[in-house]
Image (cartoon, rainbow, N blue to C red):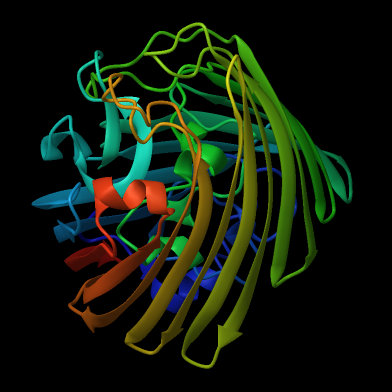
Length: 404
């Protein structure tokens, strides 16, 4: 996009050329899929005009050295990345928005990266990933949304994606400021926002001022181990979500969904998922402070009912950013890779606390680099300590290149 008149950095708060994807509200409110964040949340990216289209590009590439401690830990260097493009224009009295997002995560290998207490999906279609985080698919979103005003304060919208994100859960961790600073995925990911890459989504909704009501028909099965292809859409699951932004600094949501056979290795297990979350953002003189609290419950049928709680925060002060995440979760998959273990399919209450920092170096042309690290400690029941160690400690060092 060289040679174009690009807008970046703090000017993105206004985004005067863009409107909300789903209605007449500030464009900064829009987050992943059709989810909302506080209107005051910071946005990074480059923006320009191409005829009737307003175009925005955002992305990052993070080089990570990961050392997970304890008996079930491991170490690995890897690259995680994301590149997102969005184009918007007026059409037929409404607004058309096209979105695409991709990643080079498949290059880290099917086994992803070591992450103690993480569970979900499979690397080879035969065995589950345990104490590892799976890579994202190469294509994370190809979607379009059309909104049309109904009255001066209300609008209706239709979102279609293959892949896309249904109306279920909070804004995905990598797209909310309180979570994107941390290069590791939450261990509660599959309780809250794992449906952010879903191959086949249709969402219809209604916006009335600060309130949004929406429902989705989508594919319940999570992406398979083939990270470069497009999975077959099934449209066998559904969800509904209500979101309220009562002030410019606050966003809250509740959602409920039925997922048909979400896990490839457990095709006969269906799931009902309930989530609730609240995100608060406070602009500072030279930065932002954002915090998110979230709860998720999965009810497997047949299977266990499991809860998870997450609290995370990030604060930026000029080039300095501090971040932290606390999680508590009920896990029944920690020994799914060993059916002979006496702990197979038992439910364990586990917790994790991560604290980190990075420094941002401005480069040029809307590019910047973050250099930082984090450390994590865990709370484990006594029955898990023979497998994990008494006090496992993990750390990550990272350099992130990003479009500001």
